[in-house]
Image (cartoon, rainbow, N blue to C red; front, side, top):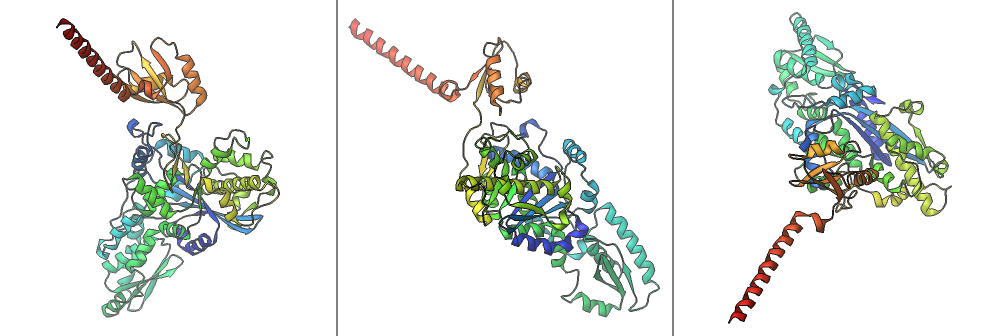
Length: 529
């Protein structure tokens, strides 16, 4: 189900209640961009987790979330789960002096367009959101500082002011009129600016996107301005300005397992957009995320770990993983609890909507449930029995809790509840260059591009380190360039190739040479005497 700003406030209490009573939540996001196009800001297999984080942090600050999907899984019986799946179209809060800058990456917009993304819902009716730092700024605003920033808002406001000004000149005290079709901040903007511009009126929201404008004398207005029941109190304005952040805070409060697929970028955006700007320190980011979400499960990491053990065919995407788990290859699929869509989310029962955030969030949750059931059956040696409670599935997944897959870095996953596992990727290669003056990393990268993408880093003037994520291409490159006249590639060995080791050995050689020379010279002098 799609939820935009015009429906969000009405649905919020229901969504908060769902989160508090569910078993786990699937998450997915779509972005206006992913990574910087600048070479020095792109992630590399050479990057430590901290280096990777710094590069990703810059991209997160540059781009925003266009759509966030939640699939809220509720267990009804041991053999039945119901998924409530929602697409939230988001747009940064623009109210008062809060105004965000955001960028669009052409490839990301092209990708979203290809899969039918509704840009009107994103740009015109996106749910506002803000983080805690922005909220603190809003707390210091005063009514005179409210500003209408969007072109759409200004047009609407101009029309309303003209309508009310025309009416008030002939209206008598206690006369009233109703303004229609006002959404979200328009409800506040219109009331605040009308009250500031026209001193003998008062405004009252009626619900159903309507505002009552009433003419009254200044004394009555003064009494209303100083009552706690005023609809334009700062607290209510901030609550509306927070928008989706209210639901994010309900998700944090619920402390339910959060499930995603290759979800590192999702977690970075959650922190930056709805909690606080990403800290400079990588370990502080990990600590913050673990506090917000104590149980994180990445189906990319889990499926990578178990795939060969259970002899599934290779699957590179979330949808392929889901299809394999639903097929006859998975001998436990028949006994796995059935997953039903909630009544207001039936669109996904008959239609695949890949790269729609709510559908991908549903796939994440479904994949997790099927993998958990597979592991549960394997441990219990009984393919016919389902776990009575979701906590039993969590027990068999304990090895994978808070382990999130990392793309293009020196390690394969991040541990949010402890030290990172420094298991390296594939073997490191070294390229020795001859008769190729002025060669640089980019030229080596292009040379090897016919096999696959290698990350390249200069070691010395004519030596380069190479890393790839495909073993068969590494083998091919080693064979192809073993006797190449200009570019010889071999396996890298630290004790043979590391500059610091070579430097140490050279120093040792010099010391030994001088010692031997001194010994022989000393011996010759003794003989002469």
